Length: 139
Image (cartoon, rainbow, N blue to C red; front, side, top):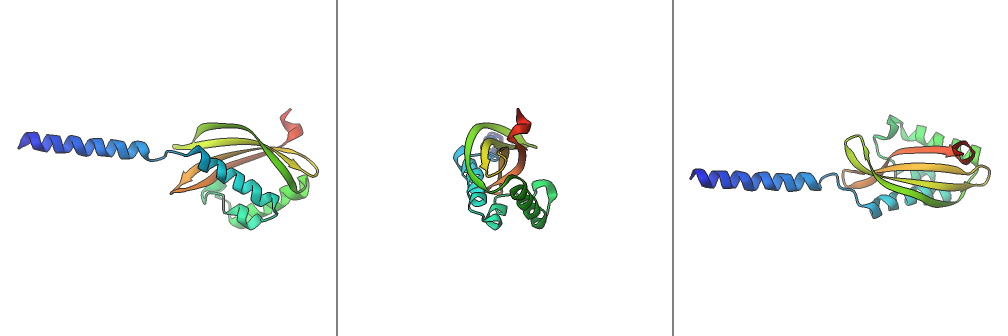
């Protein structure tokens, strides 16, 4: 009887280990689709759709504050006319597995280098961090 209990405990522990190892995994293609979805929405002028790509925990800003930032970036740099993926890497966002993508984004006035950190947020791929620098500032 004791041996059966130990075997059952071992099976339960193995199952917990397998489940915990699969949690937090991130699919590179899904993460890339999130970053590109955001950029496509911005390029199309659909700022409301662009906001849907951010994690609710992103910089603790309200959607209204994020919308102001998006509008201010467009005002300063001009509308987005294109983008090119320059780098991608697996990374961490706090204690979550994440993917980072760096793009060269072409605007009508000033081009930018934009880095996105994408996480799996409760089953949905979302932007957890977004850094923007004018291209001249990165040289």
